[in-house]
Image (cartoon, rainbow, N blue to C red):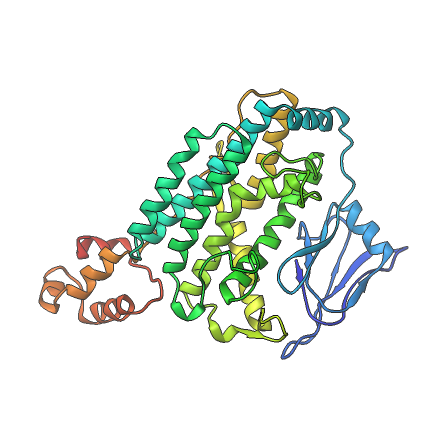
Length: 400
């Protein structure tokens, strides 16, 4: 559940008779406040994200949420996670001790760190293949793959991070080439700051990563691992607070990258949905755009994927993979991989399909059973930037 705006309120009413959790969403421009009420064990949400500007949450509400295993995350304007209230963590001293021992064991630490990096790079390359069906990024894809091949030669965690960084640099070059130049996206690094919200795309990515961070933090809390002890991200440097959370984000960052690309590609987000309002020239979401983007995030995380004979949502997959990490740490299993489940990324409007549509004459279309109005519709969509669907019977007639 997302709450935003001015006057967000979370409290418990009718304590003696019903103990309802009352939630009031904030007030924003062109949007009035909305109130909700949930009885214990009947709330249809598994977490609450707040980026409101004012409001309160009562002690009784915190108790209610903890008893119902609902974490609360507070984000700033940029999507950065600045506070969280989590349900009680399971007390698993043996698991945490195994985690500390693995972090001190250089061989085991490397094995775990490599599992995170392998999955991140594999998903990055998969997303570039998906983009490459629509955009001319062949050179950038080749450079990214060339850097990714160096992973097999890495023998230390430092070398893993070096390979990961070089792959990421080429990856963002390809990603940016698929976006309109008007968005001003040049990558995730600037000369003065990393990941700064100096353009709409970086702001959307930051916001999405904040949501992903909350999901990973929730998974770590549920399993009972220590947030601060990671394997890829060293817990002795500036990332002291939640190194393991940063580790777990890596195999799933593609979810955010995909959502952001789809948002701008479909023009559900555009330049006019953002504005600059401070001396640091950082971008902010327009209120309506923020709601749209949050719904897109929700849809992507709720999309299903088959894993071990079941259809799981991606937020459930994150918890499942965290559980598998715990089993590896405790010695219950001897293998660890984040490569599966792999997403299925389909493209119905590839460059080949668009070109076939635009070069198809009316006479050829008639011979293939494609009507005049259908061809007109297809041409109009093929000439535009927006993605579009071409249903199987029509695709077969186009013969692509």
